[in-house]
Image (tube, rainbow, N blue to C red):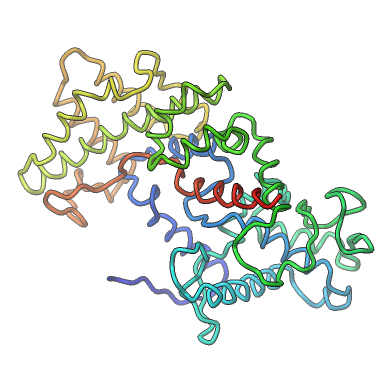
Length: 408
């Protein structure tokens, strides 16, 4: 297997490389037709705060706990440290500890499970970067829209002399807001002993905190999952988002959420066809083959029935969640849907739409426009498959919460 390496000059370089590596993950792998902003907008509405590179819910607390520890340092010691450096160092200590605790074996959700402290091995994206948006969405902290580095540096500079927070005499705040002010806007309950026997299972108080945070996002699937046991059972037993949407949408009482689930489901069906068509064009151009013809015909003959609400599907509804989508991608989705509605499918227009969209989305990297054969193999599909909208990551996070709530 090929590997990727780089010279690690700075944190900025690591972040840049990390962003590139994120694109190699599921759902961000090869967005050849440029529909990722629409997919991500829908995912944000369904599973807010969840990303495709999150693993376990515990990380929503590990980061705030580290920042709390920094604020609890004696003032003289705290003044000698940068919060960004402190956070990074502590994250690696936790990573190495958990990697050893779980025997460096995959499958437990430890970020950096393969890394060893003795070798001082690092990772491209630390948990604070992976979870930063989620930490804000779940109200674990409030960074005022700033990145981790920018927010922590701004906070430390706001009062370099004091950086004082109130800690109740017993070390445990009875209420998240009672007498508690801090420069990092941390909202999770104070836990001075969080490192003792640390693992990735949620304590009951942590599970309750995340459950309540999800309940506050009324129009999300997450809110539904932590409040409706029947829906959660269907969610847990489903292997794909489309399966879950199909069996659950009729039971969703929240009108807006029901519409969003149906919209996401039907958009996934439409884009499945577009990506089959894209692979048809690749195979014809590079191998003179039409090996995806049968798959296309099967999809085309059933897509209307497979959509939940074909008759009322409205392309404009998609852009409520993704107003940053480029105009040419909006046009592509609209034209693609119109093409499929025609009584007689215009094959020449179908081919033109796919080729033009790939060129607009990828520019000089467009395979069809510039005859680039890289990573194209005969009979093998590339590009996005069925859209999942972070479904599997949400399953892992919610499962952690459900398990933690059993101890309440």
